[in-house]
Length: 128
Picture 1: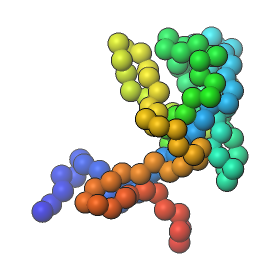
Picture 2: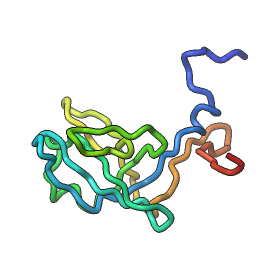
Picture 3: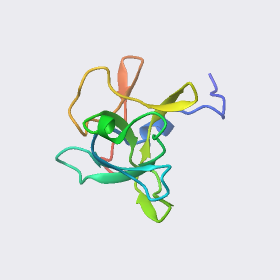
Picture 4: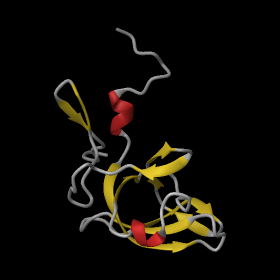
């Protein structure tokens, strides 16, 4: 069966390095729209920063300690002079961003996988 070329294949999904992070720091960006978040990715990785517009949904103090889903292998961007090193995954409720989080707390740095046909699919850097 041929796959629609507009759809993502399992191979495409495996290219995404999705991990569970924990927000350990947050401050208001000087542009006063975005937050600068410090994300812990577990003992095997260094902490990263992400610039994100979450002000309408969260107070800074409510973000600290929250787990989140982070896309790591995306090109960095500069936002108002601050480097944003990854992408924070969110959904939208009432036109406001809502963090995607695991239902239960999982180890920080854990890979996010997809399950299809009884197999787990995830980014695997072995041999790359």
